[in-house]
Amino acid sequence: MLAWSIIPAYTLAFSTLPFILSVQASSSNFTLRAAEKRTTASTSTWTKSTCATVAGTYSGYAYNFGCLCLDDVDSYCANNNINSYIQTLLDTYIQQHGSTFSYPSNSQPTCDGAGGYNCGSLSKLSDGNCGQTTCDPTQCSSNGGCCPRGQSYSNGKCCGSTGCSHSGTTCSPVLQCPTYESNDICCPSGTSGWTGYNTICCPAGQTESNGVCICPAGQVKSSSDNDKCDSVCASGWTYYDTVCCPTGSTETSKGSISGVGSSQTCVNKCSTSGWTYYNTVCCPAGATETTKGQCSCTNSQYTLTGTGASAQCTSKCSVPSWTFYTSLCCPPGATQSGNSCVCTSSSQQISGTGTSMTCANKCTSTETYCTTQCCKSYMTEINGACVCSQSGYIDSGSACVPKCGPGYNYNSVTKNCDPICDTSSGYTYLTGWTGKGFCCKIGQTACNTVCCPAGQEEVGSSGQCCNVGASYSNGACHDPTAAAHRRALAGRVDVNQVNLSPTIMFGMEANRNNKLCPIGLAACPISGRGEGEYECLDSLNDLQSCGGCASLGTGQDCTAIKGARWMGCNMGKCEVYSCRNGFRKVNGTACERI
Image (cartoon, rainbow, N blue to C red):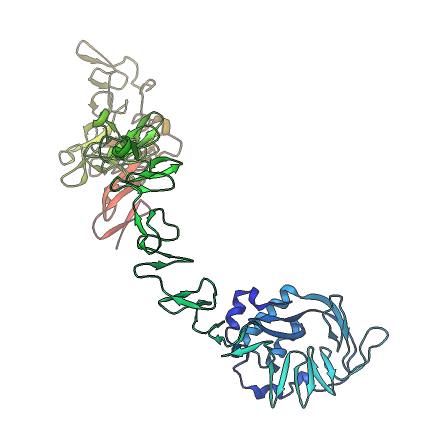
């Protein structure tokens, strides 16, 4: 059985009775729709339907719409002038509480819980089917007409078989009040002369407020008869749930009442000013009764000190702004860990002892704390190391600057990579046998500790240049008696030697077997000089002959990259670290105009 009051949404729908009626024009439901007119005879089939008896009471009203099936709710509400909101409620109720059985064509379920049905004005055959009819299989034959299940045909229209009434051209639901009505509200039995308000009926002299009957201002319900209202309490007294109490008290007051009758007054149970009485004891300000007869401070940072009237809540920490934790007081920014205070910020550490303890920054004024350590303010931390955030930049000691290639230093004034050597005077930067850099005259070769003219090399680390294969002693070079030949360079250490491969440019073909330059250096012709003059260059790192000899067209002059501001040569390839104004970096190897 459906009870509208069980579902809160239903209460809203029926707060006033007219809400159950549709606001649509009622005359439309008397015109038979196409499905309700006679059609040709059809063969009976059995189909499943979910049906439920929709009946109950609401606010004293009784209703009964009979056995309705889920598939028939739309037509039932349309023909009986029931609005779409109630239609949704009917759908929901049948879905939740209905039973599903199979029924033959043109049958009317009875909602007996066992799949029972009847055939209306048709005969019920021995095989359970209903007799042949021209009605649609989903409708019943009623009084010579075809109507949806749960409805009957009369005077050219289909209306609800149960719980609905016909009045002229209107079908509407029937809601019955077994007692009496007042302002469309069904009043309860055992009452007489009550007045209906929004949702309930109230006795004379009372009105409804939030579903409850109340007395007018200045009156209270009589303690002997709840349907009557009595005058208010004596002057200065207040009526509560069941009794009038003097000023300063309620029905559950924790104070003490002094006097009797109308002479009653409230007196403070606590003799100490500012104290409050709880269940069994008076407690000072900031404290409450936690266990019977004992006071405790409500703030965990405070503790109860003193006895008797001198008891008070005082801070557990002697230093203002400090915080008490499990067993220790710690300064601002710190918390207790084990038996000591630690700073909550990883960038701070405990400084000082005792009451002088504070959380101080780990870094200096020129540093910033990164992930695990302090780094210079212009750097960041990556994989545990302080580095420049821009790729291709290094720390100059006071700022991050571009990393210049071999033979170049960063100029903080021009903000460019300037040559180490005086190129205007014919010097160029070369790498010696041990990886040390030299400023050599063009055409010379960097050896161990000095630069030597073409065709000569340094003897050991003597600083003396002699013909290839010669020795040096007593202040002079001594050529070998046999024909001159280039001696092996075994034992020399070259920083680029481990990176050499057959693909590294040799420069001039004559240097294929390192006949002209040490291992790892390319022999490059000197532009504008005589034929056969060359210089030995590190084509892996040389800024102006990167990847080969620029004079032969096999290398690239990185300084000639259009728009480049900072550049370098890395493993034989030019790299652009930044571009001039009006250009932007492309793939780290070029600049294009914006």
